[in-house]
Image 1 (cartoon, rainbow, N blue to C red):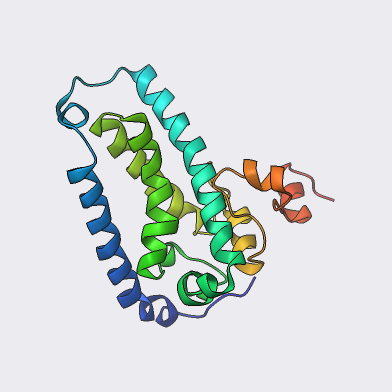
Image 2: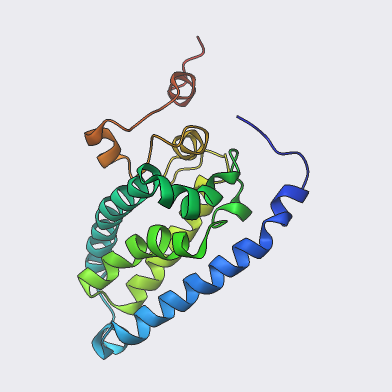
Length: 196
């Protein structure tokens, strides 16, 4: 894994991150203002079973959306070169650079699959807020290089940044089904506690 020395590469990308963040937030606010109903925002608070059901649905919906859109932007040469390549500038991702991307990348690859679940499920705003918080923490952890218990494995995502032809999805289900799931054998052994 290629490591960048010092803080300069991280902070040099901050203007790009800021622009993508502003565009992404404008997109989220547009979705909330124009594609939700009063019932979603002001309705009765959901039961915990409903929250759990919706969160599981969100993960599965994001797996489908992220896998196919992300893979498209890798296989479509112009899309990769113009839009998605910027996100792969850092082969050893760090949390501050998790959203270092082109504004179209932010909207199409990052936020559209993320928002699809809440819109399809027409979930309460509380569940939506929990999902956004969970997803952002998961994104930061998956770009941290540390192996905490999260949905997206940092090793899997680091490997994607080193070898962009694998590990496109959120959960790895569609990567497995399409033959694009990759792991490093030494990391699997480490995770299983094998000392050999």
